[in-house]
Every structure is written in C-alpha cells, then in structure tokens.
Image 1 (cartoon, one colour):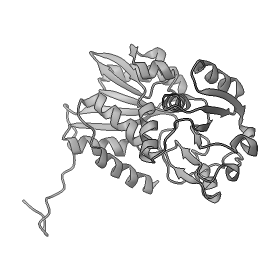
Image 2: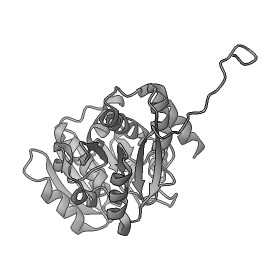
Image 3: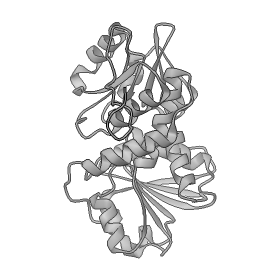
Image 4: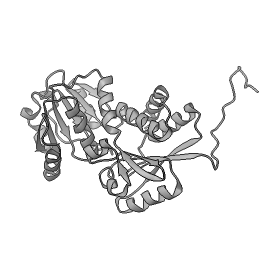
Length: 295
C-alpha cells in the first residue's frame, strides 16, 4: 500500500519484548541531544533498539547503575556530573578510560559492565573535521572535570606544545595537571579570573570550554576574546550552536566550533561498541542538527 503521491506510508518503530535499550544518564539531562541521534541510528541500521535519557542525581548513581545492569540495558552514556565517579561502580575499564580517569560510555560485555571513554576520539575527530592541526600549538582549556580530562588526553596525543587549564576550583585544576604530568606537553593551571587577562590568551591557538558554564543559558565568565591571535579557534564542548561562550568569540570575530561534532563522533564510537555495526554517521549528523535547531 502506498500513500497519495506515491510515497510509502510512515511506520512508527515498534517497541517489543525484544527491543534492546540504551540510555544516557546525567544531571541535568533534559537538554540532551543523544536520544535523537541514537534513535535515528538504530532505525537506519535496522536495529530493534531504543535510547532514552534518565536524570540521575549524584546520590542515586550507585542504585541507577545497578538498576540498569539488572534491567539488561546493552549500554549507556554518562555525562555531567558522573564521568569520574562511575568508574568505581564498573567491572572493568578500557585504556581510554584509564588514561583519562573518566568514563562516558558503558557497554555490557558477558553480563559485566565495561567502561570506555569515546570523548577522546570525539574531540579529536571534531577538530580534524574543522581542519585544525594541533601539533606544537598552544591551548587554553576551561574546566577540569571528565570532559576536560578527555580533551586534555586528545591534545597531548595530538602533540600540543602547551596547555593552560583554567578552572573555578584551583585545587581541581592542580590535580588535573598533576595527573597528566610527565608528558612532552607543558601543562599549567590558572583560576577562571585569569581568562580576563589579555596575557593568558595572547598566543592561544585554541580555547576550549569543557565546563558546564552557560549550559543553562547563564552568562559566561569574563574572557579576553579579542586578545587572541586572529586565527584562534574557540571550541565549546556544549552541543549547542549558540552559547554565551561562542557569542563572545563571534563578537571578537574569531572562528568558532560547537560541540555537536564531538557529540556525533563520540556517539558513533559508542554505537559501534554496543551493536558491533558501523555507525550511520550522516544519519546521526542530520538528526543532531535537527534536534539542536529545536532547542
């Protein structure tokens, strides 16, 4: 049967007792674009699966992980603020998670929960798509949480010469610098107030916001956007096309990159871990852009 005009009738996906379930957990989580991306991927790949978002408060993390294990989820993503704390709740972790000290993707393996960090590859591929060669560059990294750990790992692997970590809590930034010491990349730290100092950004090739600042639409901290070189790239890991951080870079007429590309590539890697199938990258990209435009 065909509809008027010769198009095939639209069929809603059927949820059944055979449907495989994946999820994302975080707090907050209602802003997440991952359900749109992964549900489109399941449909395109012909997989009987569905992907949902669960708000999990920090105090409930242990019970949530045990519940998802008991319910037989094929895997789940992990976002703020659980990426570091979840490690102790898993049966095993891969090299990427061990290096970063953070997990963003959990996959069920032989009825055990295994943690990986696909943010590292997502960060690197997003910058590759933007045509940026990181070798011997200088970067400023805002934030010191799980996303910052993935970004710093990718920057070191790409041969960045220097990274300054700017964070509200100096002790956490110091811990990040200490954990990633002993590489050829020079790493130091600063408070968030240093971002307003023109000297900090005067020779920055890349400025990355890995924090949740601005996620709720609030104003960003003061940043001397215009003191950077004219070709400096501002990269916001928040998967929104319009953030306070990117707006500041736009006013200074600097190049900008939102976090949708990183979300896409880390999601594609997670999809392949869960399903063993190649990710339908173009389908996922289109779904993300559509979902982002509705936010």
